[in-house]
Image (cartoon, rainbow, N blue to C red):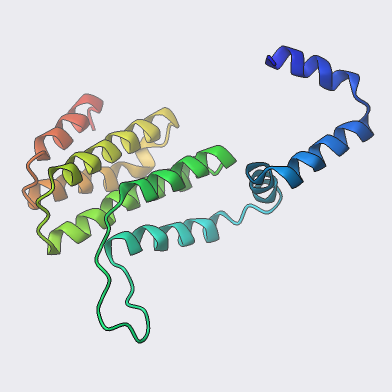
Length: 177
């Protein structure tokens, strides 16, 4: 069904029928429920903090009580990517999305500053995240608000001597910070 056909169909329904359909969608589909729950009760700060904790546990997992060993860091970029995609889908403020995008990179750098990482994929993945974050802040017109954090991420790659440090620099040269 095209968007045009949907509009035509919805125009034929009365208010009561529309309400019934929306309630049915709300009850049947979890993403619809999540969307409406967020729209009517955003709590972006709480959502942001919970997401930061979830991302940080990917790099610095918490030892469970009575456990004999500390869990190993998983360093999955996909966890942050799912959170970011979810935030975009439900319409979270672009400042919050940019914050979580940059936080993901910063926590990965914090981890790599104290741990040797031999997987090249890690560095490539963080570079992809960096490029996505930079493109996001530019497209949302909020580059000025995140300029310092972006520059410090790039400087940290130089300080830690990442193999792809010049790729980070090249991204910033394209936007002329």
